[in-house]
Length: 360
Image (cartoon, rainbow, N blue to C red; front, side):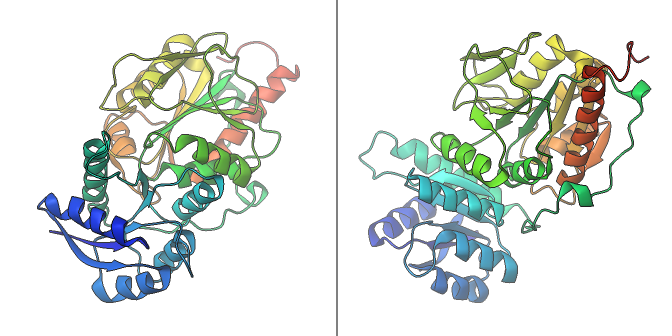
């Protein structure tokens, strides 16, 4: 049985969440509390396997509660939010920065047409998070200048990089934040990204990420040309592809690896159109999305990186890539940022005419 603590201030929502979770037969609700202060006490005394966390609560909101739990009694936390209000979304993603692992939509009542799907998503997420044994809170990110460059790059070892592609799933929002916040302001390569996330939360995620990192970050639009230094995320329920002219193409082809957007679709398009002129990064996440395509990118001459096991919340996607020997480099998020900075510096030198000819 998966011992679950519900943190929710609404009695109606408390009853609904308890009903959904216990109906599965493998989840036991060991406690229900209505505010953050009681949640801290319950987390310490009940030692649940998973906590479902509301964001908007009196006395102590979900972000502050998550932060304190992760500092004192770390446990997998799933944010359950029914609000798309900007301030609530900001708090929700700050909670993920503080250590929460996933965010799902608060289920509607049994009479709503989306009730069954939302209930299944909640149950599936709680089950998945219960298997995460090591939970780490994310520490304050040091400035890039304080990080040693990793590794030193030679002109002969790196092609002219035109694009960075990044994919992530569970644990990805915090990893993305850590990487993008560490990149310098003058980082001049476009970044395209896929983050597996429940529909409806992407806009809030992008808004929080742009605000917290100071970078230009947008949801990709069909037909637009990628701009240097900007970050583009695949929109809800659409695959993202890139052509040789760095133009975005969105499509509604079937899900791959059970998801849409899929990292596999993005990586495959980059391998086919840019090949050695791209860098690709596979971050924390469940499953295998993107792993085979990272190998394809490597075979095409692209620079390939994966997040290391020590910092990944879930080592499914990067672990699959590691098993395929698809990664040129295995690094924590901060060193991934330093590495990408090094690639951009080489790109800038070529662009400014400091080097001539193609590397061997």
